[in-house]
Image (cartoon, rainbow, N blue to C red; front, side, top):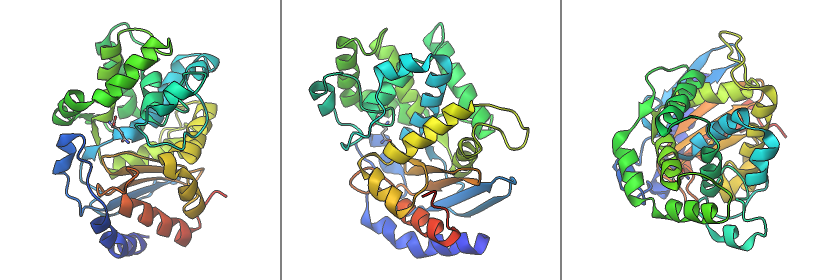
Length: 305
Ligand code: GLN
């Protein structure tokens, strides 16, 4: 397995030259475009890795899966889905367009920015601090890593430049889709995106979803079975934004990407996968990371379809 992973990383490294690191969040420009790494943890808790799997990066939109799980555990599902839809948007992750044109005024799904701002607004806690602490505690629990923290520089960079997200959030408040203090909701959103992780953390979290919410080592249920299923389904239909259809055809594994360069993948009942490659394609997905998953899926016959 280690050989296979080393070969896949080696043969796909060239694709890192065809994309670019995200720059609209200034701090993300500091990533090394040539990095490429992978970690797999299987259902027997075997761990395999290759390449730059130890490099730290910010989780960005991969966090949307975890926040969705929290929102669904904190609230009545019908309430959650009265505020955010279940359909792919077919638009870029930061698109504002359908918030205006859709009759419902609610974001299409929780995997795009507008939808994640909604799920963030549904996280329970008496104060912003309490919400942040609950969020971090949950990330640490499912990644089984107590050292997980927020990258302060990225958080500040996002907060300073996140006016597009700010615009969406105010529109959502205006339309009654979110309630409460908009700046506080945005603060929690920027913080969740700025959580620093590596491929091992992503593989661990991916494995929890793959295992329908049960921690493989302790047997503890940390996410309900139905919520795990829902999150994985959203990963299939919306996890790679407006590239989710092509990804489903070519890779066939539930996955979620982020502009930090991470992709978390969950092969039901088999394994969690974390990939890192900060060079992105035009849609904001790791350009070499997708190729790595394509090869892996073919060689290990991982497609769920
Ligand atoms: N923090 C990023 C943003 O809000 C997350 C986007 C992403 O990873 N696609 O724009």
